[in-house]
Structure formats: C-alpha cells, structure tokens
Image (tube, rainbow, N blue to C red; front, side, top):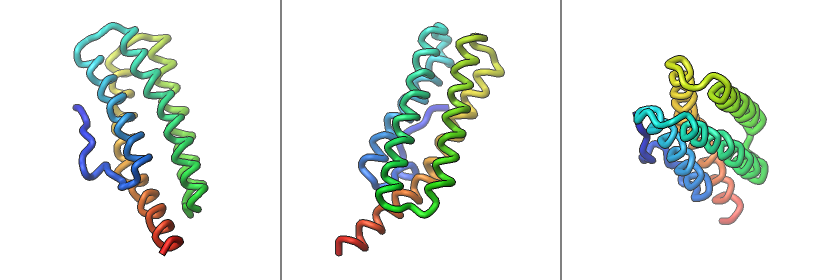
Length: 138
C-alpha cells in the first residue's frame, strides 16, 4: 500500500502540510524498498530518514502547538515521544536483524499509525492554529 497526500491529510497549515508530504514520501520510499526487495542498505537508509525526519517534524509541530497555545499539546507531545521511540526501535531491529516478515509488518503498522495520527490529530492542531490566528488578528 502506498500513500498519497490526499485532501483528508491536508491540515491547511503550510508548514505542517509540507512536512507531512515529506513524511509520506519517506514512508512510501520505505514501503517501495520492501516491495521491490531492494537491499537491506536501501531499506535501512529510508527507515533512518523516516525516523530522523519524524523527530524534526514533531519538534516543529510541537513549537507551533506551544506558540499557538494548543490546549492538548501535552498529550500530543507524549504521543510524539512514544512514536519516536517506536520508530527508532523498528529501525534498530532492522539494523540488527535485517528484514523479516514480522519486521516488515511492524514497519508497515507504524506507517499506518502515523497516517492515522495525521488524519485524526494533526488536523485538530491545524484547525486550532487557524482559529487562534483568526481570533487574534481580526
């Protein structure tokens, strides 16, 4: 399964949407490496980028939540921290164990979880940011 940046993934926030596009591309690169049976080095490289960029994005998103006083930012940050640990664990296992059906399934599951988070939670963050801007600049 590959992901497209469809309307249900758009938050309306330029920064968040741009970073989500990059995350989705990284996820698709990892899934393509798996499907095409590319070497472990290429898969490790794509998963390493996904893990690294996830940290970058979550940091940027957290800064926006602080700046615009997102009321659920503490819980959202805890989710981000948990996801980072999970994706780093998957990357670490990939480095140690190589590819296996179980590990591939775990990576795919982590990607599904990330996409669901964008749809269900990040759209709320972006809506709050827009409301905050509208209410403070009218």
